Length: 151
Image (cartoon, rainbow, N blue to C red; front, side, top):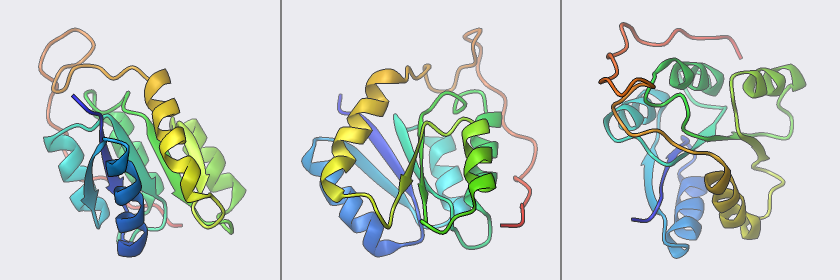
């Protein structure tokens, strides 16, 4: 089965361009236009890879990353963070701390390297079975919505 990629970005043009590239490389692509939509999609159908925009309306992408890392069945899913060139270094350092697999500067990255990056990340990041924690038991549902962090 081909790998699945969840794009979480409010930028419809970026999502359309990335999705077209990834689909041509035989990857299944879903798009969440808001943080909460992306979180719900990830919870319902855990993807092989998440591409997460840091600049989301309503909830910062860093909070989304933290929430993903707190959910047992999503904690090992690789996350490529999509960041603006002007994003503060301390925010990017915190993304690395919370397990971002790679940081892609969306305003500098060539589209041609997108598929290669996705394949490389997928090749080096094992993903556990969906809906199971490390002991093989069903993972519990999160108790609350993620909190907001000032950007």
